[in-house]
Length: 344
Ligand code: ZN
Ligand code: ZN
Image (cartoon, rainbow, N blue to C red; front, top):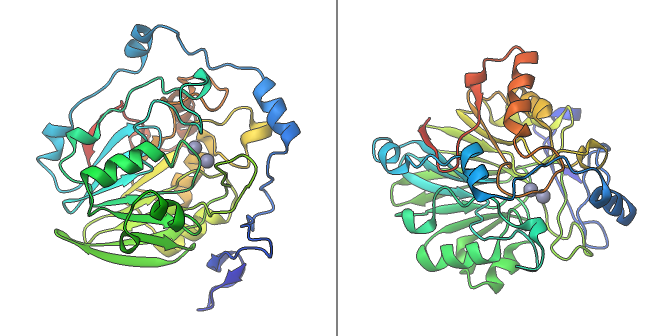
């Protein structure tokens, strides 16, 4: 691990990350521990409280869509739309940025083989409904964040899109037909500006406490991260997937905040025994919101795939309780319906 100079000391130092001699990335946070095969076995066997209805109509009632993209987006240069899970469409000064796009029916290596990773709520906005995608930010290579079919489809429909990815993923994108010059592979705290037709955005790759794998065997061969996306008018934080520790988010807030909008995961957090070090729960998400200095946060990473064992409607409910306990106005950290678009 290498830390930048510039007067930053201790917990305040901005640390890039290097591969170890075997070629792997390691979290510099002692809070993180990779799940062992035994942990994984225990996790799959642990009590399942998701209670996901088998009838689509019941899900329609409890997680209704809100299709207001056309109305809201046409009236503002700065909007956010929740597509589902960690996929959001940001519009910043008229420039469209997708976060961790997944439109597929499964978030697993093998499609159609297990209902375990099947999408239970369809995307709130489809690629066909988008006129433009200027950039895509990818947080890491897990299947619920990096989806093969979605990458192929975006590249086909929007071939001039720019792809911002963490270290170790460039070759994956090249192998899927993305032009090398459109792939921006970055380390933690690296910053890059790109000028689009409608103006300039600056992308900063930010640390996260997580891990990576696409094979289940080779872990941490590519990096995981969050992103800051900044226009001349707005500053946005996308946390990706991350566990909580008490340094990382203050540091992000100090160096990159305040944020006009933060996209913070609030789902896939039970049982804590196995997921705490890699996924924040709503209570920790509220700490993240506070520590990064976010004016408005949107809870993501829920309501779409069954990944954790908490009730499928628990994330927004637990978020409300956590906000109340922390004495934070619930209008400051919201959840959307699938497809919902709002100006920010
Ligand atoms: Zn992940
Ligand atoms: Zn995830």
